[in-house]
Amino acid sequence: MKVAEAVGQALVAAGIGRVFGVVGSGNFHVTNAMTAAGAHFVAARHEGGAATMADAYARTAGRPAAVSVHQGPGLTNALTGLAEAAKSRTPLVVLAPEATQRHSNFHVEQEALALAVGARSTRVGSASDAVEQTAAAVRLAAHERCTVVLNLPLDVQAQEVPDAAELLAAVLPPRPRTPVEPAEAEVAALAELLAHAERPVFIAGRGARGPGGRAALEALAERCGALLATSAVARGLFHGNPWSLDVAGGFATPLAAELIQGADVIVGWGCSLTMWTTRHGRLIGEDTTVVQVDDRPEALGVHRPVHLGVTGDAARVAERVLAAAEDRTGYRTAVTAFALADRAGWRDVPYEDSGTRDRIDPRTLSIALDEILPAERVIGVDSGNFMGYPTMYLSVPDEQGLCFTQGFQSIGLGLATTIGAALAVPDRLAVAAVGDGGLLMSAVELDTVRRLGLPMVVVVYNDDAYGAEVHHFGPDGFPLDTVEFPPTGIAALARGYGFEAVTVRTADDLKPVRDWVAGPRTTPLLIDAKVVREHGAWWLEEAFRGH
Image (cartoon, rainbow, N blue to C red; front, top):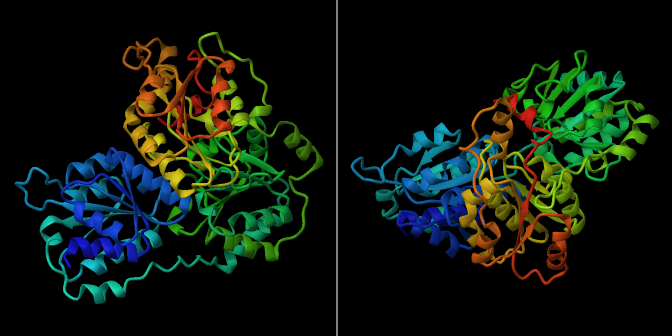
């Protein structure tokens, strides 16, 4: 057995069941070996799309996935997706064939490229250690929650592996990560803070999405009278809880912002409390005590100073604190309950519809789609001026309902994100929310949607511009010809890929969407929504404070 085949089999034996990629000469054999061993291969049309699909699949499914690319340009094409995955701490293994001869036109410093975007890098150095190096790469991705580039030198791939069958028989999937137990003193300190808190707020992040996270945090919040919120990436974690504020930060409703600003204790659970989640700190009052819980001590206090840092798994810390906590009313008063019942969501916030005969208000569009589309859904959102509308106006059933690939803030990832998430939860309707710029950057993956037979809805918030730049620079009188474009027939483009497509200018144009939802949904649907372009989104000014 040659190294290429042994590496492919070792990846599957180590628990990799899904691989995304674009196949070339360098990764042909290793990819085929994975499929022969039982892995499901998804052929993307571009390596950047493949990387983002794998990222979204791993996030939504909660287990590592793999990306398979060609040597040299295959890896460079995938870099934006890999940067997003690395920044988001997604457990991902990247199979990167490597041309080690410097005179080869495929040669690049692949290790340097991986490290430059925050990924880990390792290499299969010889036939004798190929199986162990591969298994070790999967363990590293799973246990450290990181993106690992596994470099596969072309000459090594062709070598024979001694005792391959015996080595492969010893490969097992990584053991589950052992939850980090908190120190008694830190548990006691947090319990003491909550025992005296009058208005506590919990903000749960990605680190609270694991098994038992919701139950543990809800139990502790009920005991100490805390309100519940999430970062954007954990949206849906407290869906249905009457004390949920939904998302904190730039997407927060006016009521959520008011209540968070009024907190005397804020606890971030597996949440890094970035400038986005705290509105550059303005959601945190001057006298508010801030606590951060994370299972990595190096993550504590990175984005803002905290009064107490607790190292430990979010669910374990909550369970331990619950055992010492006292029953308190806290923030869960009749006044708070009435306010949450009356105006908890963005749909409860009045607005003046700015739609015209030619363009629909994105709020009106999003509210209508929320009513039309099935509630059991998974949403992928691209980046841009529009992104707050689908993120906050389209409801999600739980923490698997939104895949929010915004760690690198790149546009063009939303469509591939939704493909990966759709494959992770195939029993749900997949909804891709993208801008016209992001869609046109990634339109090639419409072919992947159609080829896979995914009954997906792609909603294009189309303002014929890079809207964020228009609304950021336009008010100051700068020329905008570099970020505005003539109208494009996006619906016609989608039909060329085999989609059903509808152009929407008013709410009356949504009838074909209702018809599609009614069935049989045998082909995917693209909605080219011509949205108003006169005003920036409510969160945009906040976002640009960080630029």
